[in-house]
Length: 191
Image (cartoon, rainbow, N blue to C red; front, side, top):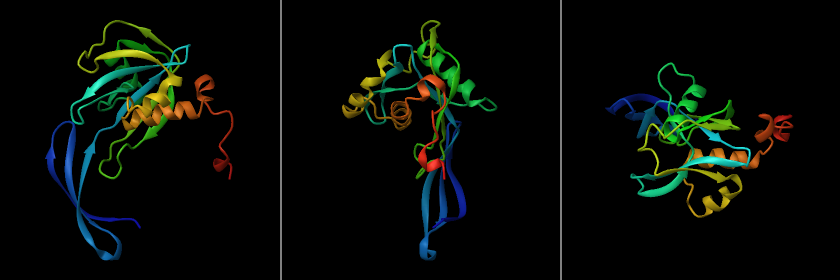
């Protein structure tokens, strides 16, 4: 059933997010107050090298008080193309300028509470241009073997939703690594 939204009221707004309460109608005409977060789009990239390693940031997230690897990702500025934002974020956060970017996936990390959307791209190369402009983003930046991703996930060294989606997608669809396109359409898409 599709929920009916009768109204939305902002509870708190700043340049990063808008926390709201929505008056929604669910099954049987019941109504409830549902909290939600509206935010701008994000863009990031899985950057690979010719040795099948992926560029990752080892960082602390104070909200969960955890350390883990993440792909570089950040906000898309007003009027900015998501691919340009992804390239900018990679360079600012890692000091590496990605090669040509091609779309990898689109994800809504938490659609039950937020309208946040992430555009993730894939690059097959990168050039080191100097230290990260945003030295507060990560404790360290590393090239990690793509094959190590399942073990890192199992050890909870990769936990961020968009990073999980992107890296596991690359592992599952290895055809994207060389051509940028799947070699054949999936069976469910052929109907």
